Length: 151
Image (cartoon, rainbow, N blue to C red; front, side, top):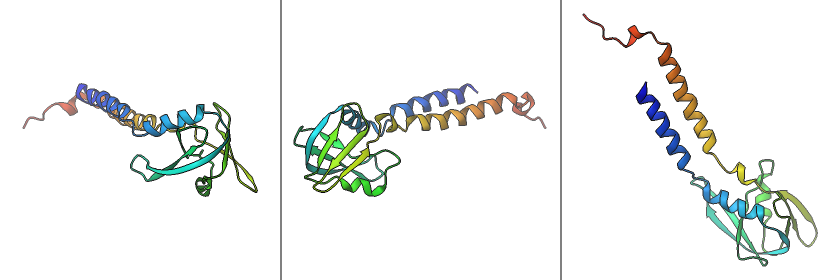
């Protein structure tokens, strides 16, 4: 039982320290805190997304910072392709609301909150439930099960 408990603790520490979404979460925090007022998109680039594909980042004429195009869960897949060079971006600081203004229309979008870009807690929950169940089962198995059978 002690060995299983030690494996559970080591697995928990390893999962928590292996933060595969840290880079995108930090980019989202920067974007979340930024205020963009009538900034024109000057460049859109593509980057690898934690081994699961790619995502785009954009740069504006207001800053040299690149901001990730990661929208909230209710966004449509097509919304990701709306970010093009020449569009005007407006966003208040510490807000998930964003507007893109073109020549003829204005679109209201929501960016992903930085706290939503963390998958470590789900993995931790799975490990803790699995090993917790194993430990509980081991506690309730009779001692005679663990003793060697003599012929």
